[in-house]
Image (tube, rainbow over all chains, first blue to last red; front, side, top):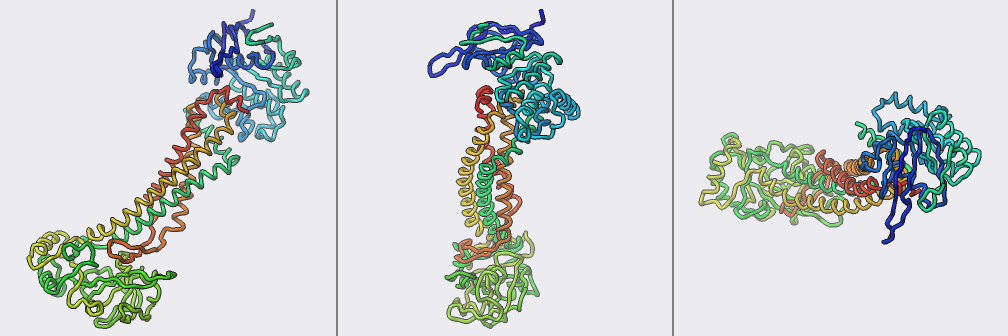
Length: 225
Length: 395
């Protein structure tokens, strides 16, 4: 059995809306071993993205615990979580979330600004990330000068550049055509298999889920598969 | 160090994206520029007037007016009093003559260039001793008036501001024609807004008999003032008061320049409040259009405090640009611009140049930065406190 990277125990998340309590995640338990590629599926409102956000340290649970690599991120304050995210997790979003005024190289460099690396070291890391995603020749282009697939590759390079343990992907192919989506999924597979990255991916697309090593389904805040 | 790098990176992004929000950024810049331009212009006006009036006088000269008179216009000194004063101790001597000049001060009417109505202009009746007491006086065009003739010389400021005072022209005051024979300067002080004539002719033309309005005395030294003043004010034959010439003109200036200053600050503050709302509006809109970017940066690991600082920097840069634009505009348009106004209880016009000084520009820039700070703080705080998942969902 591989070492556990993500350990979620009795996790619940509730929102208060107009006096009503909305339970989004209900006493959920989940273990994700290192180098896993897990697809989370489920209908809208099932709690997939909420679970992703809690594991990525973007949100805090109402109860239960989230441990990543043995660290209880549910007990961290906002500043500690910011520092933790900077070094341990890479985010890939459906709409890429690149900063439009920055070139691909500068977008990818952003997480490295939070490290103590020198400018030349940062440049080296960015070049490595760009070569992994196959965009070395596009480093000086701004997002508006790149196709959707290329933008998502830049976003993947940004997620990779600080060499995090886990990549969390929220519908990474949701805005792409089938062929481009296949390319992106192949890239994610390669990152998982060849670079040992643990990947947690939320998707509606069964074809995308097929690229993962395993899939889990969420419904009404509970894991059903 | 890392925090500063975060702030710099986000500030850089924000500034690069200003071109995408050009319209709303321009509203902030122009709003603040307007406030600063108005404040700088009004303060420059007050400063110009103040420095012109306060720049008049020397520490070793004394003004003597009738007790209870607040200005030369309402003062009268009789010939008997003049004779007593001429023997006061502490007066500097010139060729065995005490350096004290007895002058007539009144106002006459002339039309300003481009104006429909006439304005009051001070006319000073002087004699040779007046020039000796004020050695800064120089004839810069034409010649001095000849004693006993209805001739006038015109101060440089008045010469620039009034119609019909070209050399050789005749002007009419109180039904008498006076010939303009020269233009004089007094190192830019308040006398350059006056016309000067022979004191005897002025006494006759303005029916003053042998009396004059005031006296100006040149003392042996600055320290002779007390000795001179004690003699003058304690002599029972005299009903006059003595003031150091510098203090006299400073008091004359303080009222009007104080009003202009207060008005300048008041208008600037009212306009600045409007600019704060423009800045708030613009920064809220800047934040709302960049929520996803802010959420992304926060997700990547940027701290809320660095987002706050960077947005504040953006607001301050916009404000500073507005401040520089406004101050620059005020400088280009108004610095050195000559106007005249009623000043110092004389009911006459004093010409002066707007003076946009470094200190005034600094005050304008400080106002701009205050507007930028207040206008930027709430939107920046809002952005920094934004829930990351909400921000990411706001696409």
